[in-house]
View 1 (tube, each protein chain N blue to C red):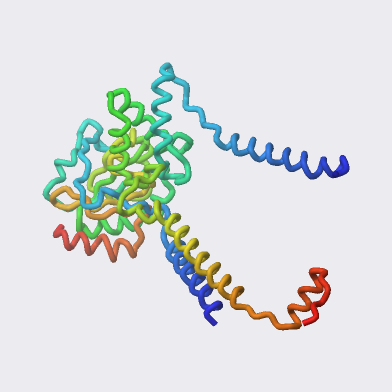
View 2 (tube, rainbow over the protein chains, first blue to last red):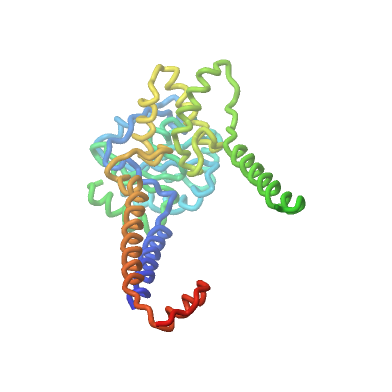
Length: 174
Length: 166
């Protein structure tokens, strides 16, 4: 009886490890930036390149940074949801147009709708690197003190928006 | 003594296969060339650091080997930072600040990676313990075994000895 139980126990432990391991998403690398101040930046606006916006200008309010690009297919999936969300007028959402041509980006926003309060143009992707971006789209929630409180890698889903982003924005007092 | 045909199959074919496999692994170590520049010494230093960093887009590749856009950008960053006179450690810290420990191709030894580093040795110790217990109990069982008269006779027969008179 004991002989039979030991391999069974080992097997069950293995199954446990595998079940947890397979349930995790290896693409989701925990960001070291959560609860850290958002990196400083100063970027030209997409629609007015001569004007710049910096992280400092956004202090004192809760805001969302959505990293997107016209070449990014997954961005199209989340885009209608972002457009809907922006209509609620709950929180200002800034777009970080990542490694994109401004013409393409402007065209894209015309076609699919513009949910952004302002869009920043990060042509070289350097601000993206500062934000630890590695898979567009990515979405950050930043609080009044300029601290990153939440990061979504990949498209924002209705569940993530409803269960994580909206409650967090409420809690932070947008 | 083996006949020549069998020597061929037994000795030379496996040796040739082994060589072939070795050549294949060496080929896998071959490196992707970076775009040529006028400063090969700087290129070499960029490559050394890029080898230490994981590409987050294609996670099993280093930044040195990857063709992903992000890897190209990060190599560019490494180059710029080296030109600014930053040290390798400063550049690695810069990457860890943004992408976490995961970006390091060789995970650091700290509280969170303790199990990762020591786990295999822990398993080895457990396995050795299980084996020691097993061997001891088997030896004890073997010592405790009593021979019946019939078994003793059979053993003597097998050993080619004359059956004893007892």
